Image (cartoon, rainbow, N blue to C red; front, side):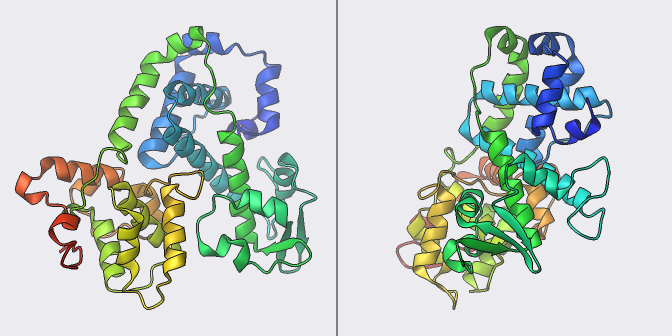
Length: 361
């Protein structure tokens, strides 16, 4: 087992390495607690922090934790967990192969312990559909549509690309994002699967722990109350910008829209908030909102975690509760739970009829 396989456990070579070692998964989950603990950590960290946790020094433990993590995700059998876990593993892979590619001045690698671009393209059978050009890369339109299907933002829509001769031009950075999507799709493929009883019995306590974490964080079905005064500081700030008609970057617009959808606001209500923007376009705003809600896409997107908000510069005005909360939805739920009944007035009921705006002040 190579360190490369532990860094990129979704590779076919990593799978082959595990098969070559004739590893018996049932024996692993019963006898190797280090592997199971790391596997559980991968899943819990994905839910709580949008990361995969601290890699282990021992290559065998790190590599074997990946298939065990997939077993745990399958045992919990929740679509939101599958999506969150796959996306987080893909984001970790993106960070690693981006670092590997940057070891040279071009997106090509000399011999190293990491991956090079050609290897990643070959891994996903993308060598022919993707061609390098002096300005970046060109991708066959069919391949582009598959890879960009879950990419959020106007810039990914085919109508906004300079399609020519059946090819779509992309920048170096956009190519890396599309490769991340290829990784996510592979990791998600086949999840959840049926877990043999012998293995499931050995991992039941670990799966229960993940279910408990998930029940605390997956709040989209439990909250249908809009109280801006109780919003986390980051969402208050974004809502304030929306209501002032300020332009939001794509990641900020996604964050506030996903948050509002997750706490029960309808597409019509969210669209109405954006009307004050001078560049407001109802059709596009409605399309984006429906996409995030999962009405016109295969995915119902959750709001970004605190770690993701911080990475994009959207984590602002942190208070004491922020210091111990990993997700804006968890913050909002706790504020609602702690509030007196007279503080929890849904602004849609109190202000909706007379046209007053929601306010976080």
